[in-house]
Length: 225
Ligand code: SF4
Image (cartoon, rainbow, N blue to C red; front, top):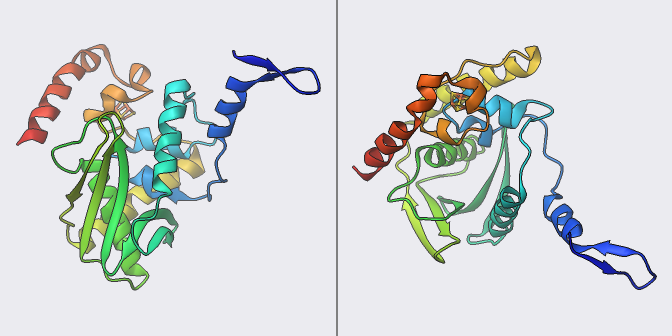
């Protein structure tokens, strides 16, 4: 820890002050958030996003990554920035909107060749929520900002039919809402994110854990198609 002497005596712990400043964030609205719905596995979403006291303890690297992402989102690109959305018990905040164009920003350490599935789902959910508010949405993009190589790309997302998106959102909302009320963890869905999941060691059996490497290769190959 880096301690320096204060003007009136006593030590100031600069590292501690910095880490607590970047951890501070506005109080989250209570409800089911789009960031929880965008995942494939509702067990993971429940454990990360919905459970009152998450087991996830971010380390210094996680804290810095979250902070950089949060700060980058604050830069407005289009006329309306950080639009607060609320529909049918689902909450969200879409980054930028103007004249039928929706943009969501994502920080990354290498730019994907196309929009990632969960990012595409997230903007589809925002598009639907905007439409429910009477806004026109005809083009949807994800802006990937590579913080390692200092580069950026806009990937366009082809939005699925809105009735399909709506049914998916409602079904996931109901699963998470029920889990929230009963405390019963929802069923898992194995997916490529298992290899990053904080709960993988208690969730997966030995064979499934062994297979994670193959899942990663399969996923990367699929993304390149
Ligand atoms: S390890 Fe995979 S299946 Fe288990 S909770 Fe995490 S994402 Fe879901």
